[in-house]
Length: 199
Image (cartoon, rainbow, N blue to C red; front, side):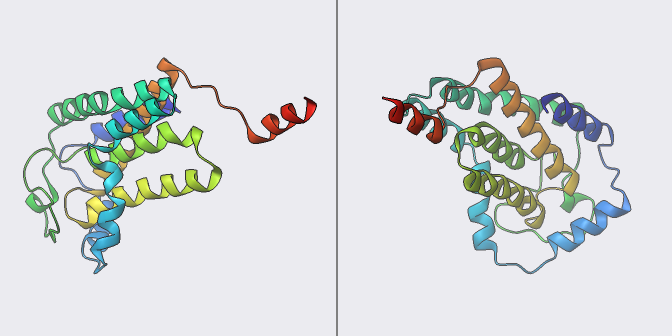
């Protein structure tokens, strides 16, 4: 999974900086110009803000999940280093600089567009925390990361491929850190109950 995510990011970087195929332009127009209630979208964007991963590290440490705490603490600087590096390798202009764009909220108009940092951080958060969540919350966390990526396009901050590249970057960072640091031991509820019953 980590290698596949990294390869997709590299491939998406290769089509930068400012070549946007017809399918991407159509998708951008449909998402960016859609009249949607921005309030729930802005809420879904919060996992992509920089404070979420450090807070996750503190919470994991308090819950005695030390490996998850290390992963979450490292995820932000690792993601930001890769994000800035990619933006320097292939600088891409913001949507408003290349096509008619509706700007919303705090959508930036300057700086590199590829990849989306918000999408990357939200995806990294989902990748790191999903092993410790029940199935329903795993689905919710993944869906929130996807909505976060779409929100950045709706706000006019990024092209669709920027959001997609950011999402795969975040998945790659999360999976790579989980592999490098290792997982905290978890005990399934069923096995714990069986163990108690044998006593």
